[in-house]
Structure formats: C-alpha cells, structure tokens
Length: 84
Image 1 (tube, helix red, strand yellow):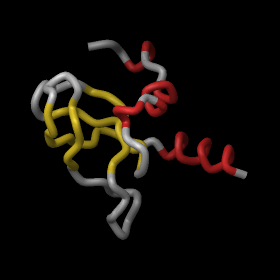
Image 2 (cartoon, helix red, strand yellow):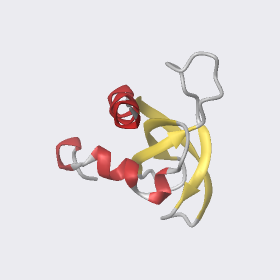
Image 3 (cartoon, one colour):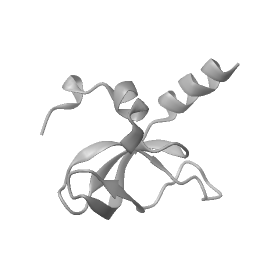
Image 4 (tube, one colour):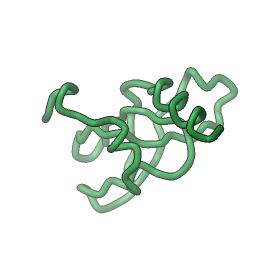
C-alpha cells in the first residue's frame, strides 16, 4: 500500500469511481482492504460523523461496504470556493 505522502487526494476525488455526491472521505474496502477517496452519503444529521457505506469497488468488481478512515473537510471547502 502506498503512503499518504505518495497520494494525490484531490486527483483521487476527481476520478469517476469516487462518486458524484456526498462527503469526501478516505475509506477502506471491506473486501480487498484497498484505501481510496470516496464520496460517502451525507444523510446523517451530523456531517462530522460518517458511518460505513456501500459503494462500488473497482478492484472487487462489485458493491462492497466501505469503512471511513478520515473525513476530508479541506477538500469540501476547496470545492465550495470553486463554485463561487
């Protein structure tokens, strides 16, 4: 697995497999243990808490459960500034 220093989180978020809507999070696939940026549903009343969610894993080639490792508030702020 690559270290966080090697990762471009903004580029990962821009990829189609990250999803189109939701809160940017770093998440681990429960099937293959791959860690990547995904967009988790923002249905929770408290956006600071994001539970596990289902999303497509390209490596597993199916929908799997993803466990949130970190929430990327900075990526959300950058997107909102770009919308102005």
